[in-house]
Amino acid sequence: MSNLVIRPAQKRDCTDIARLFLVSSDGLAAYIWSKLAPAANMSHEGLIEVGAARYAREDVDFSYRNCRIAEHGGGVVGMLHGFPMNAPAEPAEPEPDRVLRPYAELEDPGSYYVSGLAVQAPFRGRGIGAALMAAAHRRAAELGRRRISLICFDANRAARNFYSRLGFAELARRPIHPHPTLHYGAGDAVLLARPVDAAAIRLIERDHAA
Image (cartoon, rainbow, N blue to C red; front, side, top):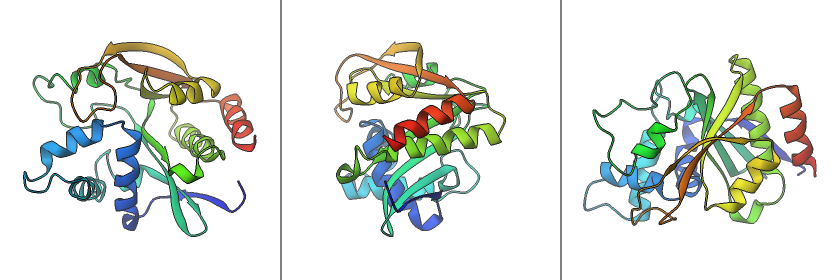
């Protein structure tokens, strides 16, 4: 896609990041953010305010500093959030709740973890997601990470096919615990991973150019 710019996120992007992260998480972010939102502010826009405030933080994994932005024509059209996974992304609860437990069990310490990737609907199918994944692989290589990991709902076949095309393979899976905010009421959450190497970047760039 011509005139596409992939750049590090800035603090002013936090609202766009939150909107796109709500899309990428298939309802999981809505579940987490709803627990942090005041009861009187549980609207869609209220959740985005909570998410934007979380991404405005500086020295945490879930920060705008760990995001890459896809920009076209001066507007934000996509986002990728990723960070090196050395330990749990948030302070661990003594016993994770039933909804979050599957994802805690699927963490892959030592990898560069992509926690969110989303492209605005009018711009999908133009290689933007692949361009963002190529940027993630380059960042992982800069940090000395040997693999890149992510978690995907098995029922999200479009996402599963996208990651399979980019060379990701299944490492593990856990049954999801249904909740009204989740887009899928049954099935598994799946941990996928791909080695970080020149071949991976070439494969992703080829997909981007297609």
